[in-house]
Amino acid sequence: MRFLNNYKISYKLSAALSILILGFILFSYYSFSSFHLLKVNGSMYKQIVYGKDLVADILPPPNYIIESYLTLFELREEMDNEVKVKQLEEYFREKLMTEFYDRHKFWIQDEVLLPFAPEIRTEKNDYSFRPADKFFQIVINEFLPAIHKRDKNLVNTLLNGKLKELYSEHRYHVDKTVIMTNQLNHEIEDSAQKEVFYRTIVLVLVMVFSTTFSIFIFVTILFAILKSLKNANQNMKEISQGNGDLTKRLHITTRDEIGEFSLHFNKFIEKIHESILEVSNFSNHSVQEAQSLSEATEEANRNLETISQSIQEISKNSYNLNQSIVTGNIKSEELHNFIHQIAQNAKDSFEETTNLKEISNREKSSSKNAIDKMKIIEKAVNESSKSVNILGEHLNQIYKVIDVINGISKQTNLLALNAAIESSRAGENGKGFAIVADEVRKLAEESQIATRQISQIILEIRESNQTAIGAMDLAATEVAKGSEIIRSSLNSLGTISNLIDSLSELIGSIEKSTIQQTELARAIQGNLNTVNQISEESTVATEEASSSITESSNSIRQITLTSKNIHKNSIELSGLFSNFKLS
Image (cartoon, rainbow, N blue to C red):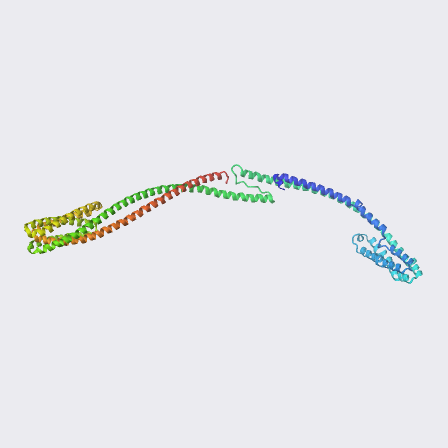
C-alpha cells in the first residue's frame, strides 16, 4: 500500500468513497438477488415445498393413523403366521405408536404455527388425538390379544366396529385440520409476499437513503478535512517561507484528529517560538560577550607582550649580572691566590725576622737607645694592627691591611736601608746584621710588589665601594703619619731591634690576617658561586617564564581568534534568527 503515499488525501478519500459506493451497489444487488431467490413462492422456496410435498405423498404421515389402521388388517391376514405377527406387532408398537405420540408431543409444544391458529391447534391436538388415542388403546388391550388367540371373529368385529369408527372420526378431524391448515398457509403466503414486498421497498429506501446520507456525510467530512488540511498547509507554508512568521497559529474548529493535530502543532510552534526567542536573546548576548571577550583577550595579549619584553630585559640583565659575577669570581680567585702568596711571604718574613730578632737580641745590649725607639714604632704598628683587624670583615679591611703592609714594607725598606748604613758604620760587627737587613729589604720589596698587585685587584673591585676606599685612604694617611713618627724615632740600632720585634709581631699578625683574608676570600668566592648559581637559576626561570608567556600569548591569540569567530558566528546566528517573525 506504499503507492498510496504518492497521492493527495482528496484522491485517497475519493477512491475510498467510490469503493464504498461500489460496495453498497454490490450489497444491494446481492440482497435483492437473495430476496428474490428465497422469497415466498420463489424458486428455492418452491423447491423446499415440493420436496416436503413429495415426502408427504410417498410416506404416510406419522401423526395420521391410516398406516396403523392398515397394519391391523395385515395382522388379521397373517394371524396364523406367528413370525409375521411378531414383526408387525413390533413395527406397530415401536414405530407407528412411538412416532405418533412423538409428533403429537411436538405439536403440543409448538410455538411457531399453532399458537397463532387456536382452532387448528384444538382440532389437531384435541379432536383428532382423542379417537386416535382410543384407537391405540383398543389395539393394545383388545385387538392384539385377539390376534394372539387367533380369534378371528373378535378381530373382525373390532376392525369393522370400534376401530373403524375411531379411525373414521380421527380422519374426519385430520381432513378438517388439513383444510384449515391449507387455508392458513395461503394466508401466511399472502402475508409473507406482502411483507417481502414492503420490506423490499423499505430496504431499497434504506439503501438509497443510507447511501445518499453516507455520501453526503462522507463528502461533508471530506471537505471539512480538506479545508482543515488546506488551512494547516497554508499556515505551515507561510511559516516555512519568507520571514518564518512564528506568531501564526492554526485555527482549531474541530475536535477530531485534525483538531488535535492543530492543537499539538500550535503547542509545538509555541515551544519553537519560545526556544528561538530564547536562543535569539542568547545569541545577541553572545555577540556582546564575544566582543567583550575579544577586547579582553587583545588587552591581555598586549599585557603579555609587555610582560614578555620585561622578562626578556630581566633575562638580559640576569645574563649581564651572571657575567659580572663570573668576572668577580675570577678576580676573587686571583685575590685568593695573591693573599695566599702574601701569607706565604709573611711566613717566610716571619722566619727571617725570627733570625733577625736573634741577631738583634745579641746586639741589644749595645743598642738600648734603638730598642726604645723600636718600642715607639711597635706601639704605632700595634695601633695599625688593631685598625686592620677592625676592617678585616669587609673588602675595605683587606685594602687597609694591604696599605699597612705596603707602608710597613716601605718602612722596613727604609729601616733595612738605615740598618745597612748603621751596619756599615759598625764595621765588622755589623756585617751579619747588614746581610739580614738586606734580606729584609728584599722581602719588603717583594711584599711591595705583591701589595701593589693586590691593590690593583682591590682597585678593580673598589669601583662598587667608594666609601670603603675613602676609609682605607684615611687609614693609609694615618699609617703614613705613624711611619713618619717611627722614621724620626729610629736613630739607633736599638730602634732596629725594637722595630724587628714589632716587625716580627706584625708579620705574625699579617700571617694571621692573611689566613683570615684567605678564608674570607674563600667565603666571598663561595658566595659569588651561590650568587652565580642563583643568577643562573634566575636566568633559566626567566627563560621558562618567557616560554610560558610566549605559549600563553599564543593561547590568547588563539582565544582571540576563536572569540572573533564566535562573534562572527553569533552575528550570523542573529541574522538567521532575524528571518523569523517572533512578535
